[in-house]
Image (cartoon, rainbow, N blue to C red; front, side, top):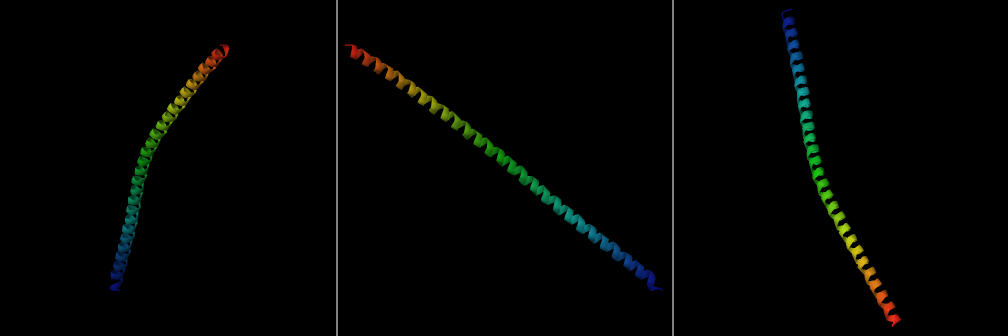
Length: 100
């Protein structure tokens, strides 16, 4: 009978120690998961920042291409206008030459 209280105390100690180990393991898993999530958030922020920079660069390039196409189209139209004017002058000169 002398050993019964001692056995109960030993069993209670084991249960408490076992519970503390489980709680510590749960806390460690929770902390590891939270750290991983924070790293993922940081990576997402960095990726979004890079995507915004790339989008801005692409927009600048697109605007430059649009402007270059506009200038090229206007130059072609100016050339067409000059060609039509030159053809008109030549046609008038032909008419004048035929009258003489």
